[in-house]
Length: 79
Image (tube, rainbow, N blue to C red):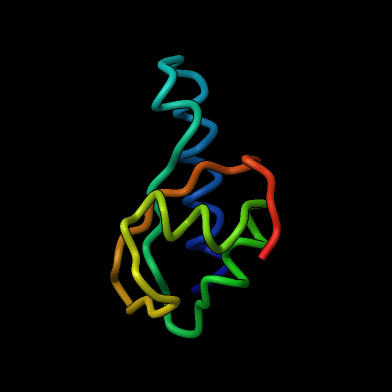
């Protein structure tokens, strides 16, 4: 199930690159799955935890299953 979800994210991201707009090409929406943590998502998308928090107006590290997060892959950063 998780592999399928990641494949969907990759397909959506590639499709957004083909569309061409700035926002479409530079961000995606990730739906939180059971077991996800901000730290692991940050590592997976090569961004920092603080960037994910900022993009999504999060005050803490707490995320919940089904929550949609804006991610801007490759924006760099750690922690």
